[in-house]
Length: 184
Image (cartoon, rainbow, N blue to C red; front, side, top):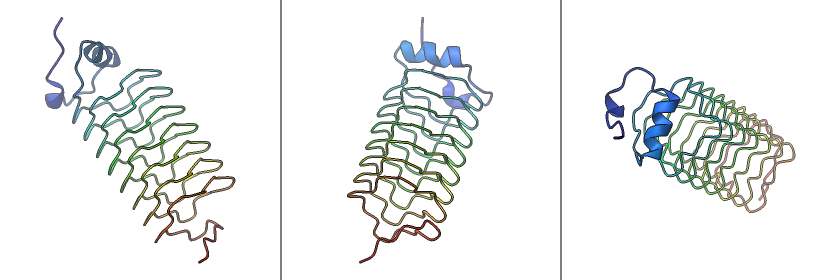
């Protein structure tokens, strides 16, 4: 069986079974694919490329996307509970209003990503690059941001209750309405 190499041309949403089959057959490039509202619960998609893909309102709970490339991907309102994005590239990705409760984002690159109003409660963002990211009104309660790069990030009105910020780079970070005082 041959992998479907025409993902870039697909305007209609791709079916979960077809994507998983092609991944199993060795396909790793799924750039610019329409995956809106797809259900990929617990799917193994490590090291796959989803550049400019649209996962809006998709359910990827407990999916493994370690070292995946999701640069410029749309994950608006996606349900990503316990998803594993360890060391993934999410540069300029749009995760606004996404549910990332208990998600693994350690060492992920989220430079200039939009996480406005995202639910990141108990998420592991240790050593993640969130520089210049938009985290306005994000829920980061009890998130692990240990040694994360938050330089230039906008955390306006984010809830950081119980979040671990030890060793985090907060240089030029906007913390208006967070109750966090970084002092000098």
